[in-house]
Amino acid sequence: MSRTYTVETYGCQMNVHDSERIAGLLDEAGFIPAIAGEQADIVVFNTCAVRENADNKLYGNLSFLAPVKKLNPHMQIAVGGCLAQKDQATILRKAPYVDVVFGTHNVGSLPVLLERARIEEESQIEILESLEHFPSTLPARRFSAFSAWVSVSVGCNNTCTFCIVPTLRGIEKDRPATDIMREVRTLVDQGVIEITLLGQNVNAYGVDFGDREAFAKLVRECGKVDGLERVRFMSPHPRDFTDDVIEAMAQTPNAMPHLHMPLQSGSNRILQNMRRSYRTDRYLGIIERVRAAIPNSQITTDIIVGFPGETEKDFQDTLDLCTQARFSAAYTYQYSKRPGTPAATMPDQVSAEVVGERYTRLHAHQEKLSHSVNREAIGKTMQVLVTEHEGRRDVARARMSGRTEDFRLAHFSFDAENLARPGDVVTVEITDAAPHFLSGDGGFVRRTRGGDAHESLTAERAVAPLLLGMPTVRS
Image (cartoon, rainbow, N blue to C red; front, side, top):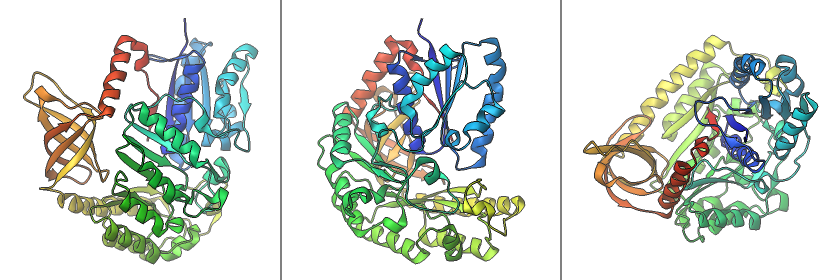
């Protein structure tokens, strides 16, 4: 009987995309996804090393599995991703019952390492220092039938003092544009209608072959693909954000009016210490040009609170910039000291109490701003790509959820007799707003190829219940 697996993911979209590859490799090796709620024979943790709580989550979950593993010695546990790349020896010291530790550069080795660990009855560690092959060549089990990530590059050439990712994922490696577009067209042929281009520093794409306009060209090429309705990208770096990208966004019909661009701090002094290579005037200038070219665009960002040396004035600068920028959302993080980064040994580390208090204030400040921005949508009509629904035939109105073109979450009610499917697009009149979502009434339903693909996949899983298992994503 085939062995079952589950994949748990911590971290960014790049990690989630890697987990799709891990699941695809395990499928190809003859394993099957575990049914939700059942203990899998193989548990894979795909880890993040950016924040300390990722370490705590991993070791907490490994401790939880220790007695399970003791009762079932044939069960296997594998740890991969950024934390595995960083703490390869530490993992086995803390959890000697782990069977496989693999790094960010050799995801494709996992099935072989699992089999070797089973036959030799001892733990296997394989950490490569450079990329074995571009992960896009590996099979994948996609999370969605109608929306997909496509990697344009891996690694990063930046040297931000708080970040360990370049050390763990290596220098930037770009895929040939022909390979990227081949994958995009293949996905669209399979029913995908929304693509998100991914890179550690996505708009630096082209550095490998010396073309500064390569990313803008890529966005425009995506606009030529019949059947591709929505194109997004993340995460760009302000240093590399050029006007040709803004022009490509504005002139490409399926490029969505949303920009997620990490700020990290509103203080120029802190940005310098972070080695972010831009200042607030440049950041705000990009936003101004995006909004001028794409008036209905929304901007989201990432912000770190409590970086070493951050004073109350520095923090106030961040609050002020948020007010000026009017982000529709900001993903805020408390600074986490990561061993091996320059920031970890900087003087004037901010106390946990001060960091926590500032984080709470920033969160409250941004909540008010997000609510204000979202309320401006009341009375407007938006096109929402349905991602899920709570449809029941025994009620008059069903509740559905999805993403607007500008990437805001929208909940809306709809006639339960005429439910849209995930992957369909619904015209929604916005009637209310909260800090994190819009609310409205659903109207016209446009059935799409994406909805057809979702319906087909759902039918397949109904025939084969074991296919219900999917990699689990942990924020």
